[in-house]
Length: 320
Image (tube, rainbow, N blue to C red; front, side):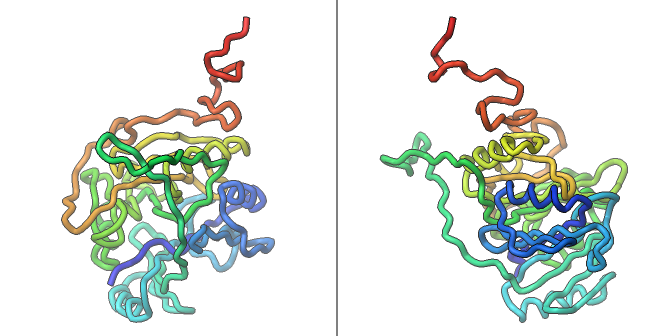
């Protein structure tokens, strides 16, 4: 028995028309629409809901302004759901309704579980050639004009008490620790075998609660680039990226999100097993990013924003 991953997230936001434009540009499919609620899907059916901040069905917010209100995690079966219900029944905010169970985590976030609604998809990433392994023969790597996110891969929150939050997810939901910033941050994955993290809990000196970002998995590094440049062409602002994290090894590109905080395209994270031993790191710029571009890449010039593009058809062309 283990949690399989994120099945659904719900934002409470103020500007739904802007959110509608953003998530369509981001590459999600709009599957339901009302004046006060939008429902999007990734390729595998993971749902992203954006509701008006005052919508009566929304759980309380953990911070002021647009933010994430609820995270729904998927499990394999009704039997698993019943077992988790027994684990969390005595916790604050326990609920059991319409095929879901849930409670409130120590950070005040509404956490839910359901039998997963995600579907299997046949998505192939680009093969990679290294010095000792040639997986791409007589085949060019792809270049994408935009991204089509596969799923919501992980969420990152600022938390009031990182140790209490880590205990909640490990003790009650069976998550496993991947790496830590001692006393400051915890990277957790849903199960011993899986991607580097499904949730990252980060405690700031102010010990405040809030959303840092939601990360969307794409197939490979080329889709990180293609998706990011498309979002840039659409006029949305980069926060940081593209770049690469030393912790998790993933390639990333972060954008500002009208639904709250940031969103990320990412690919190529580490895959871990029960043999993995959590590491400890001191926070710092070189720990966060092996390399990163500040301000992003302009989707038209294919150069860093603000840089001059080549004025010839070939980069070696020079005009006098």
